[in-house]
Amino acid sequence: MRVAILLSDRCIGSGIHGIVDTLIATNYTLVKSGYKPLFEWDTVSIDGRVIMPTNGITIQPDYSLGDYGKLDTRTDVWILPPVFHSSTDYSKVEKSIAEAAPIIPVIQQHYGRGGLLISICSGSFLLAKAGLINNLPVLMHCICEHHFRRMFPKLKIDTHSAIADYGNIISANSGSSIYEHLVMHLVERFAGHQTAVATAKLLMMYLNAPPPQPFRTNVETTDHADELVLRAQRHIEKHSSQDIDFNRLSDMLNISDRQLNRRFSNSLRCSPLRYLQTIRINRACNLLELTQLPSSKIVYEVGYKDESSFRRLFKKQMEMTMETYRQQFGSREQLIN
Image 1 (cartoon, rainbow, N blue to C red):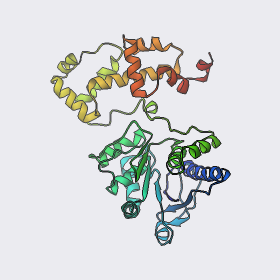
Image 2: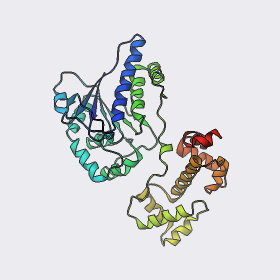
Image 3: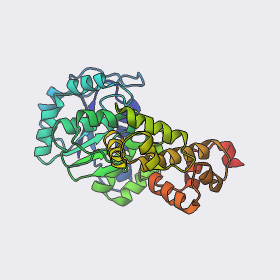
Image 4: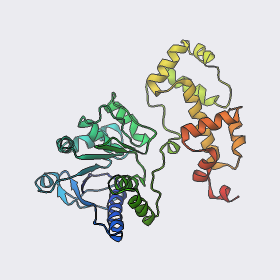
């Protein structure tokens, strides 16, 4: 199986190396088990020049895009890593996508021949630009989402999955370990579960990627122009530990309940109640991270009187219990105590 990895300036250098290292580890596992290596790979940049990742350690690609297209070998998989840094501004996003434009016809033809396309984080922008994901929700770092919605307002984003496999298209979220987890997904799909498990253990990593929800706390929610919604947000945030009467909030803003819900949906893609729940969960996460308060006490601190109800809400939204969240993100000192 031949894998082509697109390289571009400002990509995550450790991620590119992580992909290659995991492919090497998989081949090693297969050989040690008496099988032939599965993967071959090439690194490709648009012009073939050295690229500068975010860590400043340059990478020399194997081929330019033009030279790679002249090879006789057939590519089975194109991997499209992030094409811009997640915290960049929109003008730089547009510039990065424009610079990567030559790859668009290549991946369109590759997909048309039945080849596999894989996007990681903002690599999804290239799939969208190529018109290949019109009905498929893509995955990316939460910081990139507002850029994607601005550039592709009719397309969907999956905010709950780490990896989404649609057959000939795979979309992966972001994070320092997603590159290795993505290769593990490929290994399980094409070499079997046993090989994937053996490779994961060789690398001392878990086979399955963690869900993105626990990392989505404190996501910026003011990137819109509706002043009334901003006023409502500030009121909800200020009084989040108290009972909030949304009818009174509507009256205070001189609009109807229906208008308030509609404007929240347009600006934040959620209802005022869901926004309050998110604020409370964020507050609970902060307390779990920074304090030794028992989780039962935290429930009441954030404004809930029904402990079981909040625990169910927390687990549904964060995809783990409050206790597990503290184990993952609490300070070492409080975990020891």
